[in-house]
Length: 264
Image (cartoon, rainbow, N blue to C red; front, top):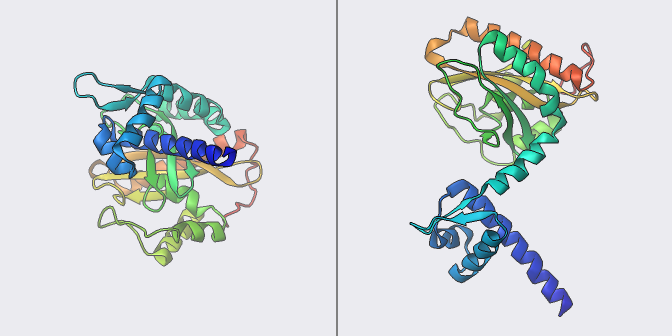
């Protein structure tokens, strides 16, 4: 009986976390939709959401009865971000870059088979980054993801690329692994990766890798631009600037310039 009860408790916790994930994506969302998306019975979904509500993690709109996450969840996530050393170390250099160059910057890390944006510093410019901290991006067609992939160990890179079908987000997305490997080779030679409308039509970006004291790539710094207002030469110049910025951040993490990259 004890083992069965323990199993039920663990199962309930897993289901509750799954519901939080669904609410975070779909909010605001009603019980019927939650039950459908989670493949749970409506009564089970309602019971679990009620518990989450009592814990202060979700709240119900009294007008339409749909649920959303509360600021308590945001605060928990913020505390996690504050502990990310690469984020804390990168902030001063990124802020100086943004103030000097007048361009917004994103800081990203690899999480499983996706990129997660862990920081964003915006410049006072007409072009605004819609990406939010905590947002995710595919690894194969974003400047952030390509910058990390290019400098990963070849075995790990191939494993990530083969983990699921590579989706074409635009006609310019590269979904052939051999073609991507050639793109990564070029990225390693110049020190930064390019995304020229590969994820979003009309947008381009440069991304450069951040290394730790073991010469392992641990993050990437990227700067998105509007493709129609950016020439290839301008993007190449920006790539060199972002690469230098990433090197400065890498030095803060113990990387020594001149060391051989693990991805070479």
